[in-house]
Amino acid sequence: MANWNSEQQAREEIKALVARYYHQFKEDRKEFRPGDRINYAARVYDEREMCALTDAMLDFWLTTGRFARSFEDSFARWLGVRYANLVNSGSSANLVAFMALTAPELGERRIRPGDEVITVACAFPTTVTPVLQYGAVPVFVDVTIPQYNLDVSRLEAALSPRTKAVMIAHTLGNPFDIAAVRSFCRDHGLWLIEDNCDALGSEYTMDGVTRYTGTWGDIGTSSFYPPHHMTMGEGGCVYTNDPLLDRMIKSFRDWGRDCVCPSGRDNLCGHRFDGQFGELPRGYDHKYVYSHLGFNLKLTDLQAAVGCEQLRKLPDFAASRRRNWERLRRALQPAADRLILPEAAANSNPSWFGFLLTVRPESGLDRNAITRFLEARNIQTRLLFSGNLIRHPCFDGIRGSDAYRVVGSLEVTDRIMRDTFWVGVYPGMTDAMLDYMAQSILEAVGLANGRERNG
Image (cartoon, rainbow, N blue to C red; front, side):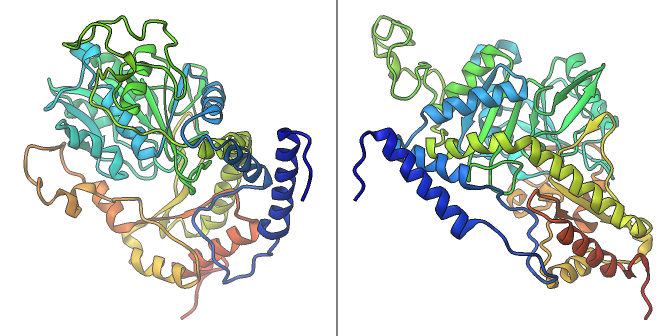
């Protein structure tokens, strides 16, 4: 057994062994062969994430700690925002973001039960779930093809005296029309929550200023689930430039407590035992004063340690996603008369999460037949999440009620539900994988090498 002179020496030797383990047993050196599995997404990591995870494990500080604080600081700087708060998932990030806007401290702008929030039904459910669970009313607006984002021409029709916020996602990395949505929110005094879970690293330019998506609204959210732009395994983040919203975010994430002391630290304000809160006796321990009905939605330091290393790779991840998306689009151009190819939103530079395709009605093709063909070739496909959320069983109990509102028809949303699918562009894909995937899609729609297939 090794004799260590210090804990630091022990850590370095242990991490060196972990790095050796990675290179010997985990490093992927396999060359792609047609028929090998092509996932729509996967984690991309190396020995540095494994060593950081080991470092956190040796601390054995199992809740939020030094790695979480380091990540929050670095992530906020990278995004260009003042505050970033880690949570245990992107869904929790959306929950905390919405709940922050229900806080009494926001006065007349506070969202109350019965108030309305403009959103889309062509979305991941947890963009909408917090609104319904709180008792507010989601107002569903249709989307557009080939951007797959909210149709901003319908915003004014969605407005009512009860409207308090807009809460929508940037679809698969493609930014929604931030200029139009932000202007609408500003003109009507509405909150804007950007669900940025599928768009981390996407850029948008307005009035000569380029910023990352998630930073244009009042609150942005991210997810660090393994398929996303970077991963912590599980995990998410809520970010803002507003100090009051930041305090509300922290409170709802941390049990609803009034105290802002981080885990493991007490009495930073120096007034732990001399305050007066609610109807509590004067001097009641401030660490156990609850100003909101919150949750415990923190993540562990082990997850944050992985995130610290992933964040360093994020710019390269985004560049790879853009390159892969462009290669696929060029390769699939011969199928443009049969499949609608995706287009980036104006004034944007997306960090793509996937490559969306919609079957043209005049082609006579069937979406499900295409995805079955691709899956049979071991190419993983995905639909655009719920397609139309209000058609799912979770709406059976409230369908047709005043628990939600629909503006006009959701014709395009329904079309996406029937005719749209997507494949991945994640950084672990090689050119050989992308080319095989493109070739297979062409064959699935009746083309081979860009030409009409005989028979």
